[in-house]
Amino acid sequence: MTSQANILKRIFTLKDLRDKLIFTAIIILIYRLLAHIPLPGVDTTGLSNFFQSNQVLGMLDMFSGGSISRFSLVMLGVGPYITASIVIQLLTVAVPALEELQKEGEYGKQKINQYTRYLSVPLAIIESFGLIRVLQSQNVIGQLDPLNMALIIFTATAGTVLAMWLGELLSERGIGNGLSLIIAVGIISGLPSQIAATAQVVQSRVFVGLEMAVAFTLMIAFIVFVNEGERRLPVSYARRIRAGRSLGTIDSFLPIKANAAGVIPIIFATSILVVPGVIAQFLQSSGSEKIKAFATSMSQFLSNEIIYGVIFFLLVFFFTFFYTSIIFQPKQIAENLQKQGGFIPGIRPGTQTSDHLRSVIYKITFAGAFFLAVIALFPFVLQNATGIRTLAIGGTGILIIVSVTLEFVRQVKAQLAMRSYDDIIK
Image (tube, rainbow, N blue to C red; front, side, top):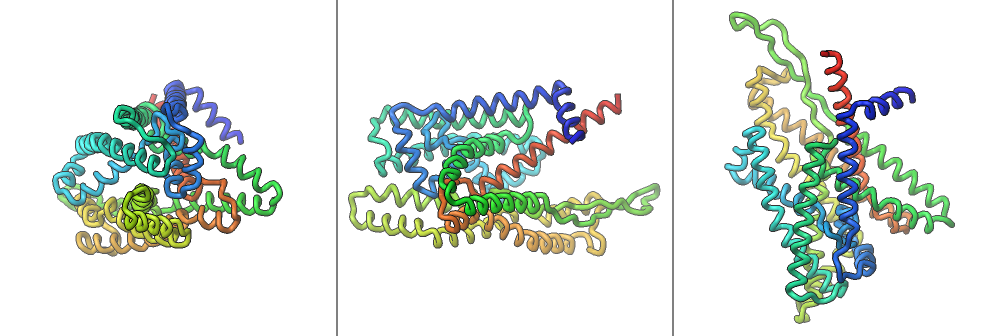
């Protein structure tokens, strides 16, 4: 306890670190205020009820921190930017020019970030227009004249650009990854009302309430355990001296995370499942009976929780392997090790090292993919087991909150360690 108190005292004693934390809190507060300012002429109560009754759009609303269901100034949040990031990452594999740009260090990283920002604007326009049309087809909002439609789309797009800017300010002048913090705080903001609603439901079912509390506690512990887990491959570097001779080696390790893909596969799978659901809801207002019947059958198919859960599980499992293969390049890592004079003991440099790395990452990714798929299905299993649907946050939301919290704590500790080192130097 004393150690924790000393750490807190140091945090607020160091002026620059204290300023970073205060700046982070102010930016988050500004964003949350914008998320609670609704656009005029929209029935927010009807919107909220609609999103609560739709599990696909409800998940999107969770990622936005409730901004979509409020139809707020930043209703799309950083969603278009995340979609643009995924698209750009996929293009770096398919487009050689982008792949080369990615290898150009800090300059390449800045250019790719710039392209991501540019792509976010048209995606925000498309997403806002599609969302309005879906809500109109479900009679959640009334018909809009072209001027009001354009005004809402412009405001939603500007809100996305503002959210991106605030996120980048957080990353540069605050603590932690700005965009991740915005998403995590948005999810956390919806917890009090969900917990209060759940408490009312389980008042007469104390045992069920205890089961839910135990389930969430175990899920958090499971997420922390797997999220922090890693396989450390031993790596040795030759120690060179005069005349090109080597004397001994320097031993190190190559860390491979058990969950290297993070929450990206879940976002991929959610996006894939959202598209047919949104199209089906939009087509249900079609004048053609055949199209309307097809849209109704598609909507009923996706509303079946067992089918939806199986498809979601398989998509998350597949995209975990897919995304890990993009971010983890065994051949490139093997080449870099060989250039630096490093090798894995017992494995020849070059092709054998690349094959060994590929074998290890596939085995670890299998466990990571199963972990993510279980996390994704956690809310469906819990809701069906207890019959309580008031607690909308599921494994995905918990995973984001836990991951962002761990990263935030790591960065604070790194800032403290850096300042302790500076004090020693001085």
